Image (cartoon, rainbow, N blue to C red; front, side):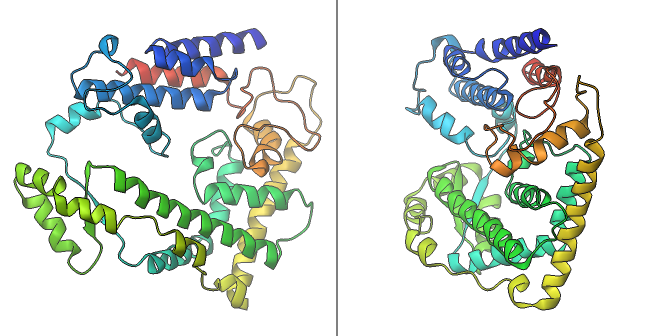
Length: 356
């Protein structure tokens, strides 16, 4: 099994490395079985190829900079965002009249308050229950992109920490702190989005005020050449410099309103009940997977969850896979960063490259 795993990794790495010299250099820096970063390297390669196609540059003739002066570093920065890159986007863009607009908030403090309320509303509606169910079913491994998503990641960390506490119930202080971390991560992401779209000139900027709907209709109804002039005009440059400038002072001074869980006894009781139900579900799953097994640990979904739950999720870093408690080692058939069989990941890479 170990030899098969090594062959699978070598085959997957070769698939990505052969796309370009830069891809080969990225792959050479990866640790064995780092399938997550290998997948990201493929996304970057696909984005570079797409950029080259848009500028009618063949890969063999391309240099470190494209014909419009943008470098591969720009592509890598763009691919660092948590978005899926769709192969063939350039062809689709040429076939359709695609118009992109970013709605810029006019009151960021109000935006942040709405984000805070939305985060707590998600918890009231059962976010922890959802995460626990997906985790118990093996549908949310820590190596997955979804497990790193804001909301899921904080929920997994909170549940993992509390599940380690044996029969202890969720407490007010721990739960409120978890809620605040979730909201803070969401606000920071919103601020990062604003900074990103300041640089992305594929998007026009419209202030999210009472005139926003009229401006959007105008952008959609205008002839294409008129839309392009509007998007690339001096007024848009002014908006990017004014409406999309990072507000570091606000980020430092913003004080979120008190959470319902911190001030409303009934709301706290409801949310703690949901948290305890989620914890009970995970503890039951862990108890079931703790039954005596043969020395050769099978790579089942339950085994994967039992190993991951107290280790990589609680660490909060997808690349550090060190379990702080005694747990059966995963099968050599499984990848070190998520427990899923490596041949499945190799098949996924083959599928993505074969569609090009």
